[in-house]
Image 1 (spheres, each protein chain N blue to C red):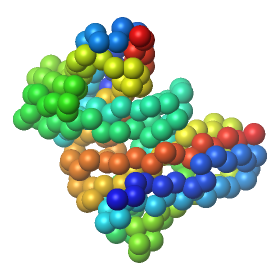
Image 2: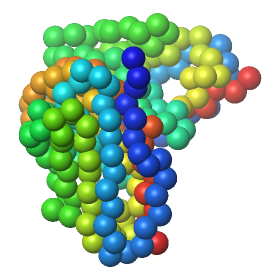
Image 3: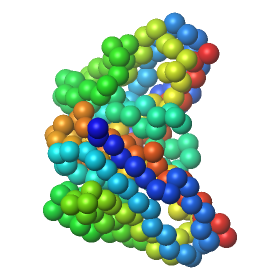
Image 4: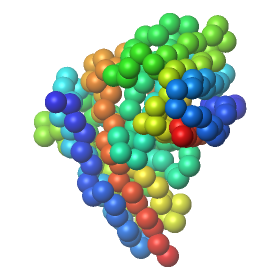
Length: 116
Length: 112
């Protein structure tokens, strides 16, 4: 079974631009979660999608948004990029993503975003 | 405030030795605690998941313990290998996603 894939792997943008990252979950998984990882803040939960609906959201500004398609693939968009948005963006998929979050989450390799 | 603390911040051990990593949390109400291993440049990989009623869970050479009363967990690595060199992250979940708190991680280096 193929793992979680993320594209692109690396991205360089300038302040003020917007960016879209893509995540393809493991086949059959319906839950996709997004995370931001920085050296200073560590891993932080952005949001989770399940069956094309945003089910949960972390404490990030509205510039961070996402969506999920009917095939469970998900995209994350960041508008009006700031220097502080430079980070590794990880997505993870799980089969159901119950509220108790007991399902094992499988992470992709991440997209390294650099904002200049 | 919901927090997860890990210690030590970094650790260097000789190959073949055992080590124990610590995780203390204040997340409430508590749902589950996970340990992840993250190799440099890769996404985290789940090692163990424990709920309130579990106090020990093993995955090969990795054994996690949980004391929900004192809100402490540990990850014990037995007979360490060079491939164990990674960051180990403790994640504590409350009963809603806005209470998913990641620890800062412990960086483990196993040297020959």
